Amino acid sequence: MTSVRADEERPGLYWADLEGRRSPATKNLAPGISVYGEQLLSSGGVEYRLWDPYRSKLAGAILNGLRGYPFGPGRRVLYLGASTGTTVSHISDIVEASGTVFAVEISQRVARELLERVVKHRPNVIPILEDARRPERYGFVYGKVDVEYCDVAQQDQTEIAISNARRYLREGGDLLLVVKTRSIDVTKEPEEVIRGEVAKLRSSGFEVLQVVNLEPYDRDHALVHARLTTPSR
Image (cartoon, rainbow, N blue to C red; front, side):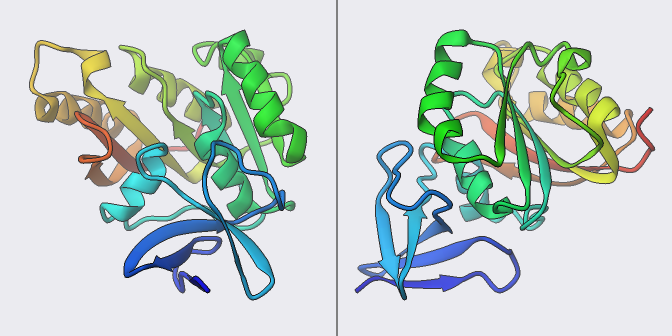
């Protein structure tokens, strides 16, 4: 039988020991449902979902030493670039039924998969079919959120994250920004691009807490953990 233990410092995160290999996992909020073909495990009468770092940048960041962990039961999360819901589903597990994930996706085709794979089985995920550049159009987001997670492949991805944070992220709230360097500038070295995006955050009222390189899971990507220190307007 596979051994699964809770992470003592990060609520909702678990570790499964698979033949000597440690893998992150989350407790399945929708038992029996696999979102993207991930393995389901049963331990102590509880079902868990293995969290694939090659399919989820957040899992890759955790395995690569992400220290800050702003998630937990009851948390409200604004997720930009929800895609088909791989990472959204794991965050849904972590925030549990008492939390909410506002999942923004611009593509109608992709959003249909998000609805079928994730939203259909998870009432704590609210889908928003909209352009992340137009946060004023999110009719379903109410109040402030605790965490913003931004994973959009756009040249102005950091500006998109900042504009959404200004509208929806509470003061002291956390931003997790996936920097896709090749989407921003293919002519520069990835490290130079990352430094530039970090500078934008610092000049916009964020304290940058950590930058995590996502290799080998995602090449030329980094995850930036920042905190909003200037009140949103």
